[in-house]
Image 1 (cartoon, rainbow, N blue to C red):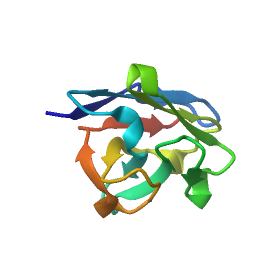
Image 2 (image 1 turned 180 degrees about the horizontal axis):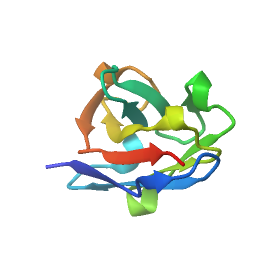
Image 3 (image 1 turned 180 degrees about the vertical axis):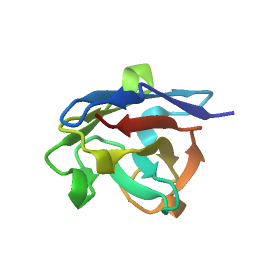
Image 4 (image 1 turned 45 degrees about the horizontal axis):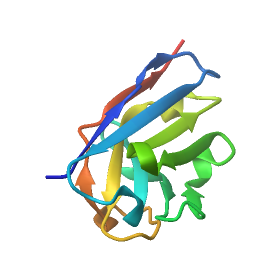
Length: 125
């Protein structure tokens, strides 16, 4: 059974940086699928933050994180990363990684089949 698990969240001051890591386990070809990062703040819908397609030549970001967040993956390690810089209080949320149903990048929740439990990121002074 394929599973993904996030780590690396925590408390950071405004302007600070964090790197989230998502590790996939189980029998699957990690590099055949798109991977995405989502976040959900209290009383808000889950939103796509960043995604990367199967071949790593396409990445997409929601406008609010463009220029600050970088998504990458290491297929050999079955690991996905989200480098988050210049964090702001509005970035506070539970962050989830997810494996896509196909190899193509999407911000849509329904385009992803396997989800982690989430990692809390809190930006506060």
